[in-house]
Image (cartoon, rainbow, N blue to C red):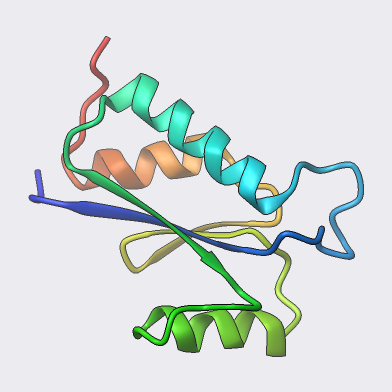
Length: 108
């Protein structure tokens, strides 16, 4: 297993125009964090939420947040490290598969 894996969620407070009837990006971030923690535990996974309209200056967060806005990507956009695993309505199965490929195993 890698020492530290990062789950990154790019989103915004306002709902994506294409995301009618979906939870907000922040709600999906909280939901993902809870679901991943239940399945894999707390160790080795860092969670980062990036507001696409107010991103940090730090790269690669800043440039990808700009890309989400410029290219009208459906947010939230979810990465596990540098692997895109979800856009708009992320699927736990894809997120779990990405974590398992990095050596994480279910705790229960």
